[in-house]
Length: 51
Image 1 (cartoon, one colour):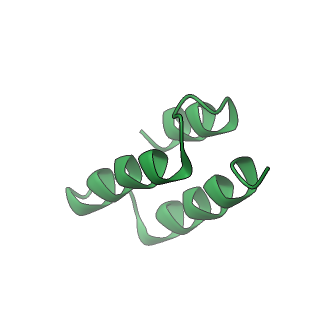
Image 2 (spheres, one colour):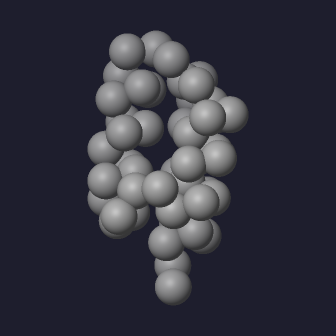
């Protein structure tokens, strides 16, 4: 799931950063992401959706 989310975020699959954040929140809540993976995806979201 982690690698898939990285690809989707990099390609700006989600319309907004908030939408991407909600998706990773759900995966983290159900245990599909580790703390480190979650943090990495949060950073990636901030970078990808900054502009």
